[in-house]
Image (cartoon, rainbow, N blue to C red; front, side, top):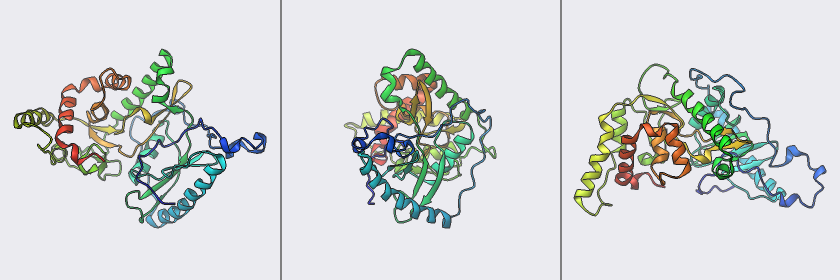
Length: 340
């Protein structure tokens, strides 16, 4: 199937699907396991002890095997197209629906680093999908890896928040806070301050100029990259530009601890079922970052009274007021280098 550059959808797709194509079939003739609403029992937060130290990075499959798996995934995506027609649901070539409680993620941001980070998160006891296989696709360099994983039940937090009770909102907040606190306490293997992915490779984020950097040996090297594309062309006066640079430069004046970071703390990456988190998704940007990064990245946009921004501030963002001010200044100074 041809791949598009459309914006990536949520890892697990929707589970509240209107099965239009199945309306004319007696439901008892279609086993539930074949429906795109079927999910396996998922790992619930607290069902296992959370890891006090970061689990070891998984040993990834060799390239030849990943390439073979990639061929199988090619056919699974084609199968998904026909499966979605049979079910009467839209086909998404980046998050391809499959029977047996599975989805195939093959999107522009999918890399081996996401595979490793998701496996580490699951080994740590976090609610994330279970990865069954992953394959290489050298003929699609913009999307070089596909991942076959379990479908997670529930809906995105953003869809449910306004309808949730205060107790449910506090439960979700407490569970998300627990996940973040646990992984931010992990000590870096080797004890160095390198800024990099879980595999020791470059970190990837749409926030970063050219969407990737590293590994960086220090925060100073990381900052140099963030400032490398500063431009004055979007400013109407030289004075405005220089004042914005002065604000942005504040972030260079402090040394920050390097902590494990999810890297894409957005409400659409939090799945909720029955008032509790059923999954924390999209680990493609995860790695070792300065400690402010987890919170200032989602807070760069939106009004202060937006419920998600308020939650992120409660989760820890309120401790990084100066860094957020600098980050917002950097947005204006470097925006042309990292927007899609």
